[in-house]
Image (tube, rainbow, N blue to C red; front, side, top):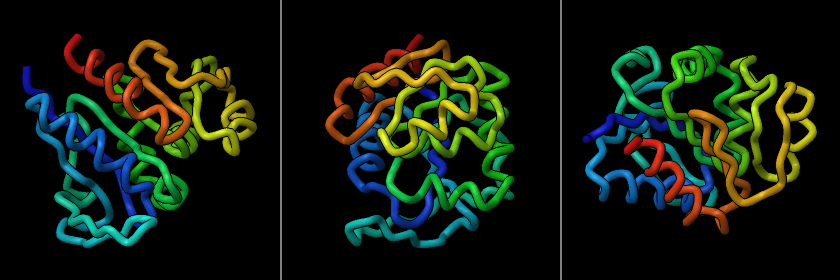
Amino acid sequence: MRKKIAILVTNLVEEIELTKPLDAFKEAGHHVDLIEQEAGNEITGKNGLTFTIDKGIADVNPEEYDALYIPGGFSPDQLRVDERNATFASSFMTNNKPVFAICHGPQFLIDTDLLKGVNITGFISIRKDLINAGAHFVDTEVVVDQNIVTSRTPDDLPIFINESLKLLNH
């Protein structure tokens, strides 16, 4: 069944963490929207690749989407500046919709205030942040806790994508 996936992203995203899952989601037949401040914005990844934003955060409703993905890099930290992003993400978590986050992506989820008791992984430098938010940090390539799939680095992308697609098809 075709699902609609929201990807919250902004400048300095780790490009491979955006492109590999994006391509995999599309290949599996899912619809994907890149969401940032304004539709039509052009963002630039850490290595200079550019991406055009499909929808602005003010123009989207989480009820229109089946899943949320937050790629890593410096993008997740920048997304934290606008609390509308955390409000959008909170809806997925409270409604048990799939949430995928890799590398620094889980750091953004701290702003939802919904990580208490969640088993999670992410890039090692955000370990303490996740623990302080009440999450149980597990240093392994992928952690699936109910509707949340997290991974540590681009090296984990194959298993991360596989587990994300499994949850989407569940």
